[in-house]
Amino acid sequence: MPWSASGQDLPATLWNNDLAKRSDTLESTMLALGLLERIPRGRMITANELHMQLKDAGFDRDLRTIQRQLEALSEHFEIERDDRSKPYGYRWLDKAKGLAVPTLTLQESLLLQLAEEHLRNLLPASLMRSMDSFFTQARRNLGPSANASLEQQWKQKIRVVATSQPLLPPKLQAGVFEAVSEALYGNRWLHVDYRNASGKRTSADVMPLGLAQQGPRLYLVCRYKDFDNERSLALHRIRAAQATPFTFDRPPEFDLKKYDDDGRFGFGNGQRIRLTFFITKPAGLHLLESPLSVDQKVTEHPDAYEIQATVVDSDMLEWWLNGFGDRIFNISSEEIPE
Image (cartoon, rainbow, N blue to C red):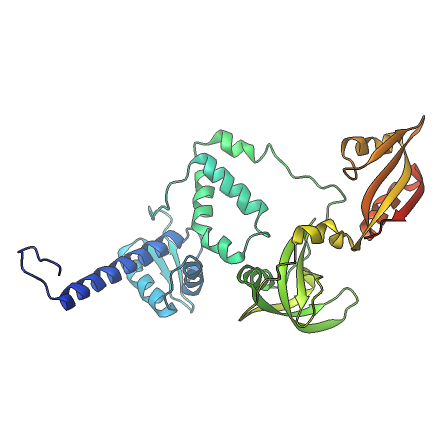
């Protein structure tokens, strides 16, 4: 039995009540710290948005609790509350010191900025929201007034360049990426309203299995309910999406890398061929540096290279070959049995 400070035995009920109060106090303190970390500067954030961010971070509290905490915090900290209309907005005052998340080094700030820029469409939306306070601090650490000239310069020293004519990304319907990434992350069935390239519109439940970025476009690999074959849906053609509460067991036989290796994103069906062609030397030099396959063979002729390689037959391969025009000739192929 626990002992009191005076050496007297404490009744078990009082001891348990004391522990419960300490636990509640600790949880309330952690919740308050979580809110203070996530309230931004320069823009308003609503209780609903904070509720979602905290839920993603593991705080299982109802919205009313979050609202009460925000009301209390805005009275004791330099937090502005915009109550002109609902939902109310909250932000740190411009000159407020705020509450910093664990201090990031300049190198960590640079890494986070690059991750935010290049991985935004490849990470669950909920994870990106839960990291918002870290991204905010990273931007502040590398801001114009920061003493971080080398780190600031780095973003001007690197570039991911296009391998074909650059295109602007197609516009996604509001909430589609969030619903898709949430369902994909949680192995939950996804209800979609989809319009294909021919304009046909369908409504269906799909099992999300993978997300791929091809140039400026995003594709969801999925299985339609009651089917066992995979399809790729362009996210910009999804008119509306909703993650359902129903989960599924991810098919152990599905492999996103194999799906890609089979040329499915290049509009192929996995059929491998032994491809042979001749290409003029100026046009074909890059194939000596970046082969088509690990078994590529090159035979040099006076004005051309003869290339033989095992590749996946696909529309993308045909487009690539046609792009060389008359600089490529004597093209032949042979199917490789499974």
